[in-house]
Amino acid sequence: MQYSTPLIPARLVRRYKRFLADMVLEDGTEITAHCANPGAMLALAEPGRRCWLSHDPNPKRKLSHSWELEDTPSGCVGINTARANAVVAEALARGAIPELARWPQIRREAADGAGSRLDFHLTAPDGSRCWLEVKSVTLSRSPGLAEWPDARSARGLRHLESLSALAGAGAGAALLFLVQRPDCTTFQVAADIDPAYARALAAIRTQPEGAKPLILVYDCNVSPAGIEFRRSLAIIP
Image (cartoon, rainbow, N blue to C red; front, side):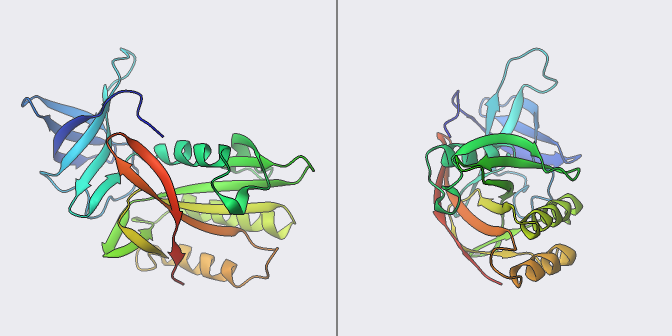
């Protein structure tokens, strides 16, 4: 995924009210940018960090700038959780996710038939189908280890339950954690942050093959030019 226009460098002053961040541009101009990340952004929202913003001059927008990336000592991190689906959609279209390649037809934002909306509904020429939910991962508290979530996620638990029910009924179901940073080699659920989610995922992983969702983790190369879907990461139970 390439950015449509060049990103703008800035320095973070503060992040507040979850979706707002005060920034200082290189020429000294102070602005407020939209922060498209509902999580706690642990170890990321530190004042003074170099950030990268997109700009949209559409007069209908309340804020013309959006916080896209942050530079950290170990690499660039994708802040905007909305970008995760675009990255995964491109990867699906070019068959870059082997575990899902059998379902080449892609539809975004699909209802599962039980009241939940999931990120993707994939189908195959033989009529088989698979529902896919994507979670954007930015948290890393230990070198090389990516973690999710960075705050308790009731919505994430509902999605997990929906995927489990779909798989139990014989449909394809998959959960993909997209690590929007290049400095990790393993992934683990942050059980100390969301113990209920950790228990639910651990229970699913003990279910028989064919009756549980696929659990996938992939990372990205992240830079101001764009976000590139990269490699599969090992999951630590």
